[in-house]
Image 1: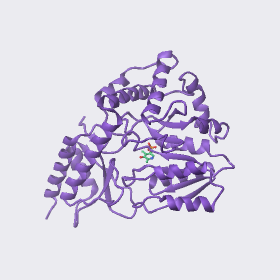
Image 2: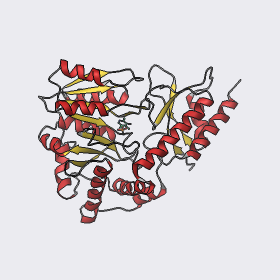
Image 3: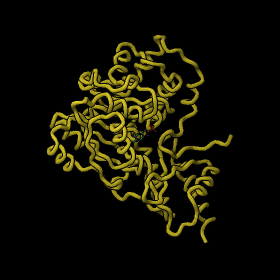
Image 4: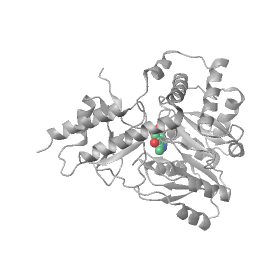
Length: 364
Ligand SMILES: *Cc1c(COP(=O)(O)O)cnc(C)c1O
């Protein structure tokens, strides 16, 4: 089998030592397994810069969307209303979640190249006093844009509203004082910045807000509070846990610490992104965003007058050991390159060299 590295922002390239953890079939009811779950939960709260008295963590089977859906359908009551601020496909997906589950919601949309503005959110809250929760995406993986969530957290805190953040592709990729930013529910998943494999999402929750959500859930298996109760008691997952994924995730957390924690990882990712953007621009691949570009994934236009298809470029680069990511914009011809996971400066050099060769073969 020909191997390659993923320049997709989740699933992403993991270390061999993370993958090796999955060679063992661990039983689920022993104390030692429950202790692994408890250690993971405590680590998540710690690296989120939250105090364990005020915050707790819930692990939830499924991909990241299941985590978003668990929160939205569990913590917004029938007599409450969530304002979803969207500037990308992932924000739009949360609107879809609310529609499907009939969660009362309002929508504030911005173009994918702009950010939701706190002044506008303030106006919407003034105009609609029924709003009790505000929800937004931190890193919009659709474009690579990093939203400014801290002032929105401050506003929610001022008004006693609940603040929900999809930090799927930013958690552990950028430093985030979750408690200081007044985030009440933060969702991320195993296969993004922590560099585990896909299989569960996790939610960092303010304890009082989680407890207040008891009985509100619309789903049995994705009831956030009911998932938390046995997990909090002794580390037991309510239904079958993804044991191999959990073992791999624990190893990924240890390796995050060995790298120097989130500050070191964030610095590596940011350096990757800067190098990538610089080398791509030099070849004529202009970045889609000129403001608010985040350090996780970059959307590029094709060079002027390009005559090749994404599929041709994709196949060529894959043969050279890297996997690119298609664009997710409906109105623009673009593609994306992630730079998180086991990706280093050397990889950015390799892939951009391969792209330069590809371009040379396709220029008239
Ligand atoms: C990856 C991601 C998700 C979750 O997607 P899944 O395919 O369900 O894992 C949600 N929001 C954002 C911003 C993401 O990057």
